[in-house]
Structure formats: structure tokens, C-alpha cells
Image (cartoon, rainbow, N blue to C red; front, side):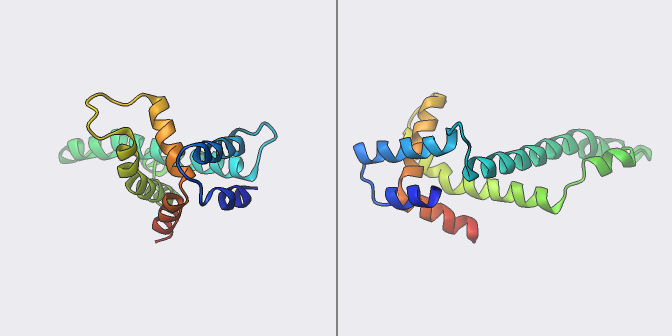
Length: 148
């Protein structure tokens, strides 16, 4: 399903074709019957959320306090360190998210208009990301960048 939608939208122009491509992608993402793409996005989002929360907790509860109390001979409890330890999967999820942000961030800012002095509205961000996802060249660049 996704492969067909991607192939069908690879050569869309700005305007009506791009709007149709965005609708098709949105349909895949929010289809009430579900899709493999939805499953992948939910699973990867959960992995990223888990890794990001544990990283923030590790920084707040282990790394920062450890540097402050180390001169006193104190350290965080080993169970807390083990619970919040980063895994290889965490590192991959965070690295991939960072790579994607680096790849699409400049284009999203360009779509939003970099001269804007106020933070953009969520709808404007969604439209900018949708525009990039509908652009076959942008998708290809992002895919090649994530693959290395």
C-alpha cells in the first residue's frame, strides 16, 4: 500500500497533485483499519519516546547529581543506574531521530519561512512536513541520508 502510494506520488507537482499526495499519505497514516505503516510508526515512536525519556531521566537523576556529589564519595543507587542505562536500541533510535531532524529541519524551516519571528503554528508545521513528504525528491534525500 505505502509502496504504491509512494510510486504514485513521486512525480507530483505543487498544487493539486501535491494536495492529493498529502491526502493519500494522511489516509495511510490515519486509516481506521490500520496499516503496516501505522504499526511501524507507533512502534518506532514508542522506542524513541522510551529512549528520550530515559535519557532525560538519566541526565537529571544520575549524571548531573553524580558530578555534584562525587567529591563527597556519594553516587546514585546502582539499581537506578541500571534502570536508566542506555541500550544499543536507544542509541539507534536517538541517532536516527537526530539524523532525520538534521535532514528535514532545514527544509521545514524553509517551507515555514525562516524569517518568521514567532514560533510557527502546529498546523503550519504539519503542512510543511506534509509538503516535504509529498515531494519524491525530498523523501529520497531523507531515505538516502538515514541509510548512510
